[in-house]
Length: 402
Image 1 (cartoon, rainbow, N blue to C red):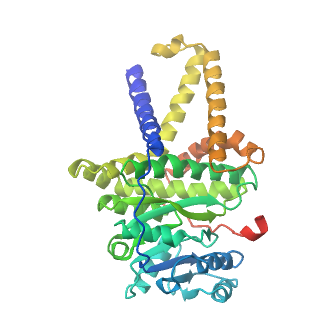
Image 2: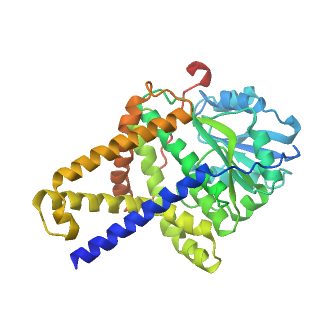
Image 3: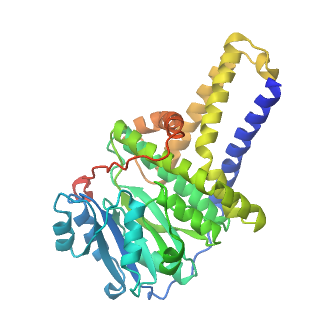
């Protein structure tokens, strides 16, 4: 009986991993270029900000330098719980500053307030950025192309301001590069829906007002789910680039990733049933795809437990089918080979994004460790119903990094 359960669990874990491995190859499929937009989409750019005086000015300046008609977009900074000069810096840089006049504790709640505040405006779509971002000058043009081609939602490419700041920031960069290439790009090229991942995304105004009702710590994943459930395809706008500041300290990374894990587990509890129902009822591939995505924390834990069990079997020679015939040294050799191959892969990903291998070698070396720590974050997060949102200090300027 133990053998049967063991094989079933291993099969589940392997099928889940194999699914994402195989779909990743669609990233290499030839791209179908969008027709150029008419340059007439009116955007409301929403920037939630809490004590962001060191970075908000640079974001606003980058948005004012967009190669897009200045009459067709407004820069709207929604300040909340500020005890510094974020308001003054944003206003001086050229943004419209709007005070969040009710108690908010998450980014999703700020966005809900913004949607209500802007309900009577004539914007066609909203674009959301985090306050620490810097935006490529052609960002709005690319999003106009997407909107003009009928896409009600689009995710831009997430780049890193401070990739060379240490192994933690390199690991974050690798995480987003891999997600950009082998998840978001792959899904757009297989004519499916990619995923919104926090910042640098566009959403249709009417759709957002009707369907965006977040109740978890990961409002970006929820918005992706709302799109999937309503049959709205999210386009990966690869040329719409946002530069984002990443943590450089492990304790800060742990807190941030814990919030993400708690949020995605909240999404499993709230939406897995609806996603499964829609996947089969409406033959909705994106719902099926998103369901497999949000259950990843549980599959990570399962794979870890099964791996530990395999090591115990190897060490003590316990008879569990084929494992009892595999010498322990083969497990060690297999692990070393996989580690080396993965490092080569990470190096190639960095080279593709024109980043230095030498400057980021520690991140390449420790990326597997970075991902491995997520197992313990997920274990810690499962019993949590919610988590206090603790803001992350942002202070990296692109000007200073150059």
